[in-house]
Image (cartoon, rainbow, N blue to C red):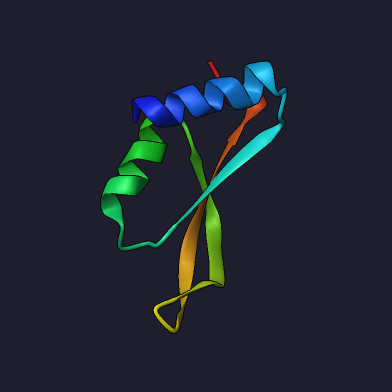
Length: 70
């Protein structure tokens, strides 16, 4: 969680990015908890986002906007 917060800080304050995304397999509850703890908002599902072990996997898309960063 601390690493995600540090990356967001660099992305928004140093690089002046507008938006960062995290795409997570919906069954990965711990990763979802980490991004939600850091203020990411669920935006929807990216269907068949990545091919993993020969299978196309859906991913939950979480977003953090610069305006929402503390």
